[in-house]
Length: 83
Image (cartoon, rainbow, N blue to C red; front, side, top):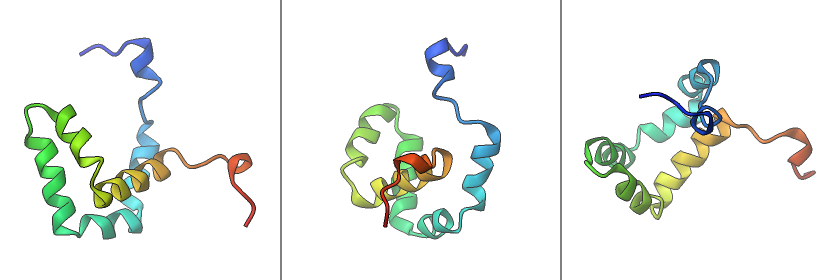
């Protein structure tokens, strides 16, 4: 497959992907057997888009997705609210 210009901006640099493997929070989530079943369901589904849409209603999957996004796209400092 060839990536178009629009797809290129959605790519995650390899050094950011490496951070996923180093995250203790993500590792803890992946120990959950229910989450692992959800991930297997996506991986084996012929229509991944519809399965993903359904799983975005699952709180555990949303927690997983938010964790991954927080690692590869950390919030910018200026967008953080003061504590």
